[in-house]
Image (cartoon, rainbow, N blue to C red):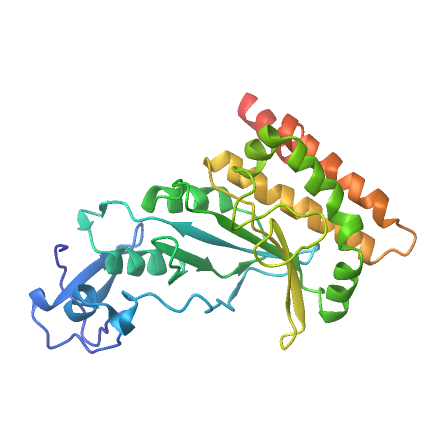
Length: 302
């Protein structure tokens, strides 16, 4: 168990919301918040037992509706789902955490990540939607240092769209999906070394190859929430290998989404040609010549 800091009056358990004011030190766990000096708390009952029968995790179907940042000119929004396994322990501000409940609470406090139950991995953390990539590379670094993103059973899903993508745009995406995405699907299938270089892994059971179907379980899922009148592209082939690779992969997904959005809003563009342009974007990332990669190289050379 962790060491304990003196808690404030009116402090509640992060999970069951129990008032901890009257509890002794051996009845709760202190969760540090990196860089802020604040603490969060989890009662011993939640830490020792499977709270809600799920070890303190929320349902896999739970989503985070919070949106971070002001709307940008591009109107982009994205969110990553991080599948992971837990490290044996982590130490933050002199406090060592061993229990997944403690680590979940820390991830929620430090990175605003929602821990959800996924039977295939230790945990799947879901984040709020973000409108900018500013500072996101540092965020990836921090998350990857706290939990283990690299096991072969862990994949990561990049959900990306524009705030203007609604049910009508979803119908157009489905209508032209084969023209838009089959060229990239086939190029990835035929160039597996490049696929692993950019995406971090090859096709698998949970992100199957298809140049016809773009649904849950395949490498690309065109997601739709009819009730909320919104849709997005979910890149399920994504896999963390290292910080740079994953950050560039999110940039790649952004570039693809923006090109697809241009097609959706321009009747003069041809879906077949846009599909080939998407392959061209991939080749730039595979060769290290994407614009965001060149900018970083130039900045490091100064």
